[in-house]
Amino acid sequence: MPNNSDSSRREGTVEETLPGMSFRVRLDGDGKVVIAHLSGKMRMNHIRVMLGNRVLVEMSPDGLRGRIIRRL
Figure: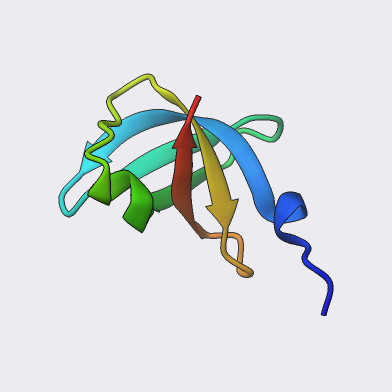
């Protein structure tokens, strides 16, 4: 099975912090806003994400949610 994970990755900017390590992220390009949570590696390594940070988001198939996999 081919790995198409690169096509589901988008860059964006954190607009709001939400409870439970979730964030509201505005994606580049179309300006769509999604709810994203931190990936496990970012939690384990205590990488902090704050308002205004640029992040890389791995999108879910429905395109409404995502997982923050990297801070840029």
